[in-house]
Amino acid sequence: MSTLLTASELVAAYSTGEISPVEATEAALSAIEQRDGECNAYCLVDPEIAREGAKASEARWREGNPIGWLDGVPTSIKDMFLTQGWPTLRGSKCVDPDQPWDVDSPVTARLRENGLVLLGKTTTPELAWKGVTDSPLTGITRNPWNTSVTAGGSSGGSAAAVAAGMGELSVGTDGGGSVRIPAAFCGIVGLKPTHGRIPLYPASPFGPLAHAGPMARSVDDVALMMDVLALPDHRDPAALPPLMSAYREAVRRDVRGLIAAFSPTLGYAKVDPEVAEIVRSAVNALDDAGLRIEESDPGFTDPKEAFDVLWSTGAAQWLNTFPAGSAEKIDPGLRRVWEQGKTFSAADYLAATAERAALGILMGEFHTRFDVLITPTLGIAPFEAGHEVPPGSGLSGWPDWTPFTYPFNMTQQPAISIPAGLTSAGLPVGLQIVGPRHSDDLVLAVAKLFEEVRPWPVSRLASGV
Image (cartoon, rainbow, N blue to C red; front, side, top):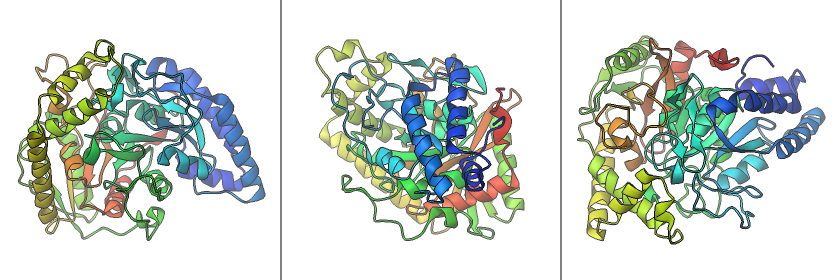
């Protein structure tokens, strides 16, 4: 296997016998061995478990009885999800690895039940707290396009793994952009679905901001993953009802003629001129393809202060459960968030919750006029690895450079990042498509249209860049 395949292409090859799950898994393990030393995308790799899963899948395909649309596809999972038999350390030295690990999260359980081959777990900043991926436990995760720059975060390990061919699929978490940020920086597709569409257990301390999301090299693959990950699980009382239709079919919906708002800055964000040019070219391509584009801002001001309250209080609540002495061991930036979160009162939290609700109402009204909203995923290109903010930028924290992502965690809307192009330095730029709550199928269909008019060469990272 000399080039990267999408999961959909891989499964098609399984069905004809051209490729076996064992061959695909060995290729993924080989890619990990060859490339992860420079990327640091994995914090745990289990070749024995992966090979056992691949052999079982190969037997099912040989008998003509695959147990799912993604049976046998090599997959990773962010080290924020509980995984039976593997520790879930969440990038922290304060989590004791020597304890029973006998529970699967809903995400992990669905992957196993549908025959996906689990390769291992991917890196995260401590407690997934920031928009880049480095931690005291696992070090710095780097971008496979250029290992001197960040992969983004907090699902940076997952994005780097998928981009570099170290597995076709991964699952990340997204509390303020953590699927979409690294998807944009690493040139892959990442979806934050409607809140509650993918069940979570245990409940996240980040509460209404917390989402899980699929990450892949094509929109079709993300749709197939949604058909797996959105299956019900009784352990999440906030989960949405079971699906009435399949995302793998809805992704092919004809969206030409629908009306899309294009907001280059959301009315307040700063965007690098080269990024702005790439995104505008992508939007023009969608307009030429038949999506009716109108330039329009949603009309809200930057909700960063309210987001900071919701984010930091969630972090503080979680960290307050950590063992004594943890403050000296955790990421210094996370410690600052912990201290910030402890300064807010219940009244502050309720005021931020009210602002979050008002923002959701405003966006609900906006979507009575526009089917989807299109923005840059990020206003900047990937920057030097090992820093929370671009060096020399004067920014105080990661939300300062992610103004396009966290508002839609607050509104709980579905939002996807899809590759829009490359900078002159050869680094990926993402296009974000946002839909009304519960319109995950529409968001996927618009992304699919863009993918068709601007095909992304998923194989270009097969031998490195």
